[in-house]
Image 1: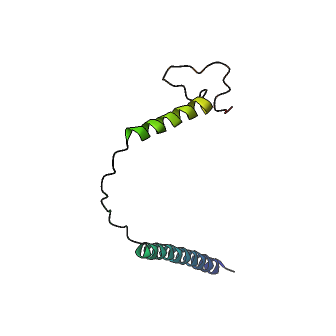
Image 2: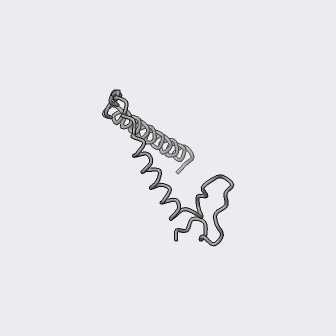
Image 3: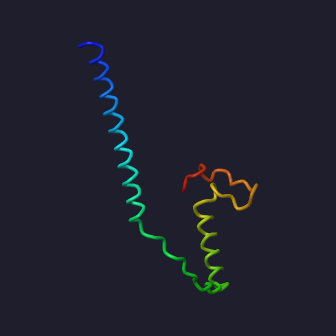
Length: 97
């Protein structure tokens, strides 16, 4: 095999590789465009009426339940106020009794 034949084979190999990569890229772009065209359009937002105010009795019950849960399970993890230390011997941080 002489130098001319070797150069011809090299150029043909590079050309085939470049064409293959170009076709692959075009296929990816075409599939992305097809997927974007077939995607459902976002629905128009619907305005909802304002929710009714929650009665104070219900808010008090929710607050009480949250406070009981905090005292039972999260005393060592979530102190009540900023700067308030958790009582000593209440378990390791992140551990539930």
